[in-house]
Length: 192
Image 1 (cartoon, rainbow, N blue to C red):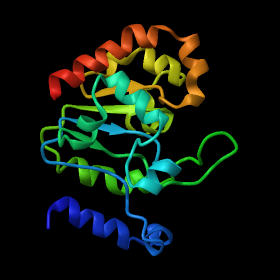
Image 2 (image 1 turned 30 degrees about the horizontal axis):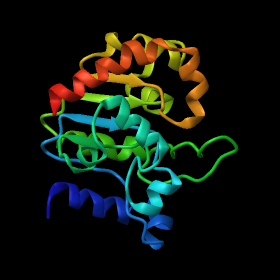
Image 3 (image 1 turned 180 degrees about the horizontal axis):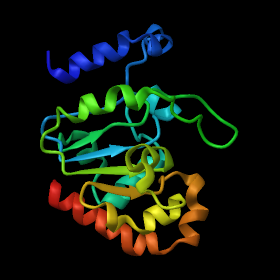
């Protein structure tokens, strides 16, 4: 049994996750000793939980497009780790999904990250990941944090969430696709 399989068993045995384990819902993350990039997003969506595949929706399609890689490579490579802020679908909210549960990332992320010695960059998708990893280093809001992405490199790369709910944000901030996306693609190409 690998260290990541052991951690998976511990996550499933944790009382915090009992409702999911009782429904036979596994924690949805991917980690590897060979990982060079980790993608930290919010939490799996409903479709991701149903199919047991992270980023298996329109948001994932856009993320892969931004990264400049195929769906096949995204799921097959061990050089990309996927560590959402919560490894379980938290449910539907009025707009989007319920936020990831407090305490989940705090309990599991550092333990998993220390088992990935070749990790170069953590891609922080959305405000929850940015707040957790950047803390006081963040700018006053997500837009400014993403706009100033260079100041967090090479350890972190903050991005807006690729959700269809953010189409308006992308239209109002065309610099994201002209400045940040090419940097993301360069990073991915270098690390893969």
